[in-house]
Image 1 (cartoon, rainbow, N blue to C red):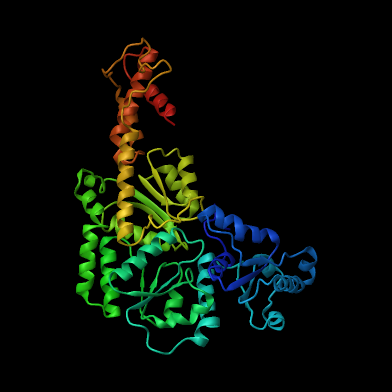
Image 2: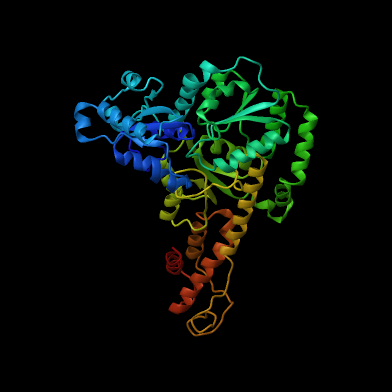
Amino acid sequence: MHVIRDISDTSSYWGASWVFGCFPDVHMICDAPIGCYNLLGVAVTNYTDALAHMHNLTPTSIREEDVINGTAPALQRTLNELRELGMLENKKLIVLSTAESEMISADHTRYLATLEPDARFFWSQSLEQDEWVGRERALLFCWEQYGKPAASTAAPAPYSVNIIGPSLGCFNSTADLYEIKRLAEGIGATVNLVYPYESSLADTPRLSEAMVNIVMYREFGTQLAQVLGKPYLFAPFGVFGTTSFLHELAQLLGIPQEQVDTFVAKEKRGTLRVVWDMWRGPQSDWFATVDYAVVAARSYVVGLQAYLTGELGVKLAFASGRPLAEGEPDNIQIRRQLHKRAPAFVFGSINEKIYLSEANAKATFYIPATFPGPVVRRTTGTPFMGFAGAAYLMQELVNRFYESVFNYLPVETLDGAGMTERDAAGNAYVQTMPWTKEAGERLSRAMEDVPYLARISASRTLRLAAEQAARTSGAAEVTVEQVEAALAAGQ
């Protein structure tokens, strides 16, 4: 039996709902109790990415008798109410199964055809599959049911691209999507569809009208791109990665490479200037001396490693992606590693933030990089992808470098009377005390658990605290007992 701690992924029902929920010309009926509707339609989306309430989602509100006799009457009741309210006018209806309805085998495919011939039933497989599979299957479902039958066989429009994947509940999608569109248009491409995030269900046949597909996320969207039968690229991370992406995209679209070079040169003078300035500045030595961990969706795991380690030389402590790949640490192992030794930076979810708090890892900086977690990423200024993402991440790292140093600066504090702190006799002091060998060794061992960047400042802070404890007790030298007392006081 495998114990799962702090589940990071939700079910395929949620993933599918976040895809269908993007379409303004769709109304969803989820075959679920009212509580499931509240979680999906209100609580989860609002508490993770401050998304608007999903007005196009209605539950069948399964009752006790429905569990015994089947949910068909509940579905018919809900459908009639929506018709009376006019909520189905000019909209396609999609009915989704949920974990609760699947447990009683409530498959409405045939029954729905008699009630509403144009409606479709989506078997979520919520009990078996995660949100990434659910998103993938929902995208394919839309193409097979609403796109492929009406797709054009004409040649795609010149220089046109689709951006596949951005949907509700995707971390930081607003900023990353803005950057990918900016890059594509910057070299002369035109965006045909952003699917499903900025599309309607009626737009689905138009997926065939693009020359190239850009798949935003490695964790889902690839299968739709493959079915469309056109070349596809994954959204890029980093300076070198983005430059290569733009050259490859231009080649596929027939855009002159000189046009790409001109755009990249302009980006180096503007967007990327901060990367170069920080890289050649005095803080450049830090990059090779710190480490980081990343726990996020597959795109961010691959992309952050390519940029931070591949381009900047920052050491990777460990990585874990979603969906979890074989050999990657699960939440139990991640928690254990962070408790044992936390790296300087941790990109992750609220789970990792909790683990760091448990470990009292004060010298580690947590950077939100995935859900779950109460974090809002709705503006265009926080991308991780593309040139702007490289600049934003560089800015975040350097700001935290300096903050780490500041946290350990020997700043004199003021007491209630406005006087600086002094020793037990009331005298200011700067002299140091002798240390026993054992005390020095204990200090060295303690510093091994502190990220390299903060080690010198942390060592000085601990030394001062241990010497103050020795003076207070009247000791002539610092012993292991004083070091332990200083360590305990700093917890």
